[in-house]
Length: 214
Image 1: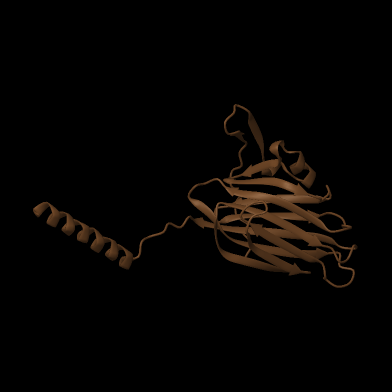
Image 2: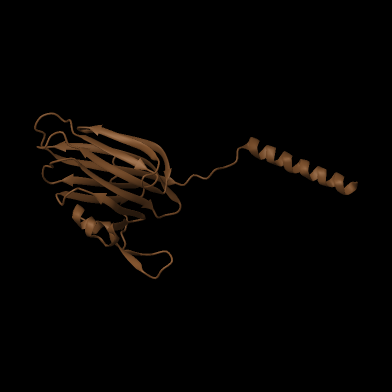
């Protein structure tokens, strides 16, 4: 289910702070290779195509590579440790779809435990929120190698928490996040609803005519 398409053209944008003249430069994601590069980016944000990624907080070290891949159908980003980790790890970030016509419709989390020394018992969790400290939309959980996914989402902005509950300190890790997108859905009134509305308007018109006639 991986989306590996041609990378959309990345660009560097300036986001104006509301109510003031100060601007925050936003890095293009393709220039980010390590977690520390993202933390050092101006505003801790980057843009790839029409997607904006903003780092909230992390304890991942510079041993983690980060990759962003944006295509017409969605986007993928991966976190990969180039050496073994010690202690549990997390990263919290925000994803925004800047194109007003599109929204995020699904998420897939895939975990790949590398340099296995015994069993694949490390747990990778992805928590999806509406805002920082807001409503938990869903939680994806993968033990060892495997994947978990959720569909039916309708959001232009998601707040993500990725957690690695390390059970074996002699392994390195790769966890990838695949997001699918689609056109924003617009609510269309059902025929029965339209019929009731029309009948109500006709009734109001009849009452108004009788009052004028009286």
